[in-house]
Length: 74
Image (cartoon, rainbow, N blue to C red; front, side):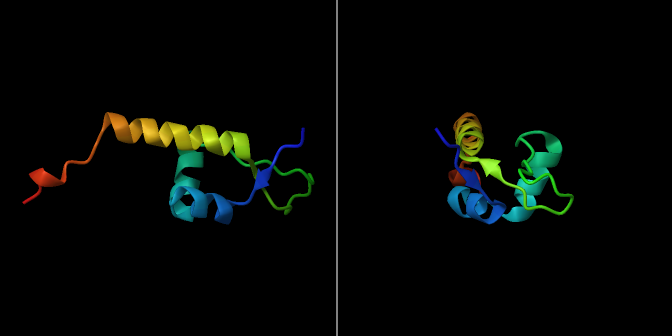
């Protein structure tokens, strides 16, 4: 079974987060770092789809735990 690789723009589109938030989440450890399958220093980096699905589930769980209440805003 081959693993589907996704670029950062595709991930941002699927999840609805900006590229800067993805970078911040990688830096903080919330999102696993992308892999460089070519091994070249400037090779394109990808995430595996399974890792992104797990990340997305984590985001949904966090939203469920801390819902935004709009009725309490002024």
